[in-house]
Image 1 (cartoon, rainbow, N blue to C red):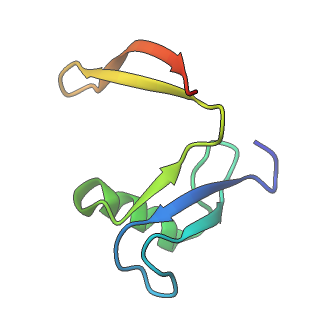
Image 2 (image 1 turned 60 degrees about the vertical axis):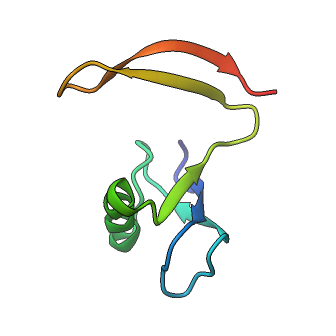
Length: 82
């Protein structure tokens, strides 16, 4: 990702300064981690309360994961979104 890389985030819950359902652009580093501490905290919260989610870019591949214990998952299949 470039120096000005961003991701799109859909607001699903109460986030001050943003309306529910809004799509917000968030600046990220080369690994896709939000530069703003508040957004990093929101993504941690989202694992529990689904307050926000990353909107995949158009034409991105969708991946299904199978749980494989405490170390995460493994790819089952990849398919193109239509």
